[in-house]
Amino acid sequence: MTDQHFSPSDAESASVVQPVNRRVRDPQQPEDPFNPRGVEFRGVSPALVKVRVIGILISAAILVIPFVVVALMWWVWAWIFVGVFVALHIWLLWLVPRQVRAIGYAETDSDLLIRKGIMFRSLTVVPYGRMQYVDVSEGPIARAYGIAEVNLHTASASTDATIPGLPAEEAARLRNQLAERGEAEMAGL
Image 1: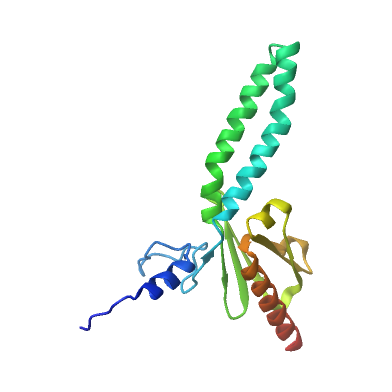
Image 2: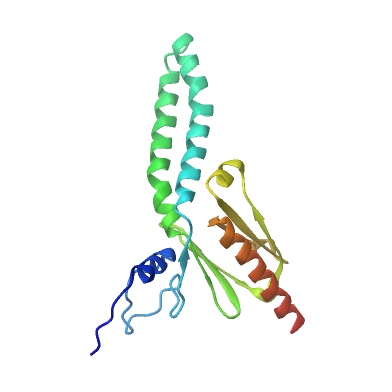
């Protein structure tokens, strides 16, 4: 047995990509359809939590402030609506970090896999040969936090997929990589 040493640069590079998979599977158990064997999912940027929280707070202000004004001026029952909206937005603020941690994507030889969801999970498999075009988008809040969203478009609208919260450089790399792989697959037909 040999001693292995980690240098600080190894630790830094190891912390850059944080896989979403953390459980060790028993080979005797049947395969989990949302966690295929041999596939390493990559997580999205934690900055997506901040962007989504800001969006929730903006929507809360837009929805709650008019009800507060109405409740203060005329209608006492409007406080029920204020309470419901506030409770809903608090629940959303609690849910957002969990949702962001559940988003992952993986590039295989022939497909792009996108996994989302906690309670209602989904795994979208997009073959490179089915992609028509790939685009990158970002809003003003996402731009301020340096993240973007990669959108995949196929011939079937039901297989279109989105990967939110990628660092801008990773989004550009992924867009170029997917476009090249899609062209290569289409040329092989």
